[in-house]
Image (tube, rainbow, N blue to C red; front, side, top):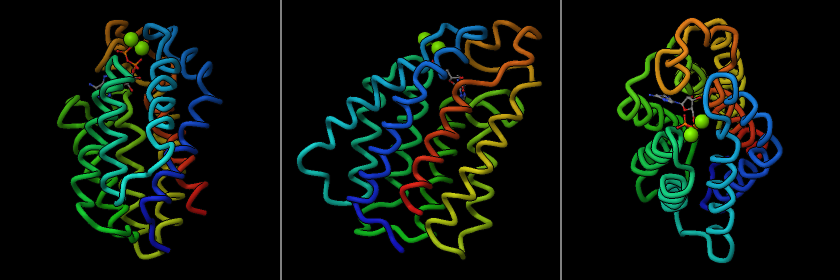
Length: 207
Ligand code: ADP
Ligand code: MG
Ligand code: MG
């Protein structure tokens, strides 16, 4: 099954619902190691995106991803806004003008999204950021490419969840949590967890 612009819009609406459901959880994760706003930031951005997708959905998957990028950059704020915005912008560029996305295009979009986050934030795996969820997600997506879009997204979501959980014992080396040094140990990174939630929402829609 390939994804149309409407499918991508449906995935983003589902992501917005998940973010709304997990708003308090994400903010609570950001409290001990940050400034207790990650859930609010994400919710503000995805609420604006849902509003932007009401009425006419942009014509191509790439145009929908671009709308997500510009909306998240302008509404999420903090560190996560530019990072997620860049991820969606790079994903939009990767898929170009295609009318439908097959599994290879979805993998390419995820890979480009990761490259965007890394270019912008300079974090590596092990720094306790969203990269710890997104990098293994892209690796798993690549391995599942032959099995179709739904398999790609579900493999990515599983790997992202595991990767997010792996941030707990780590010392944070990027973002606000890094100001705590060793005291950041024992806390799940909020951005890694939101990445896992977004990918799970996309996977559920593609199923
Ligand atoms: P802020 O820290 O500005 O309040 P948020 O709370 O919305 O922004 O987002 C924090 C999340 O952003 C972190 O949990 C982490 O996953 C992510 N993050 C911060 N800095 C970086 C970075 N340099 N690279 C990758 N991710 C980062
Ligand atoms: Mg914060
Ligand atoms: Mg903040």
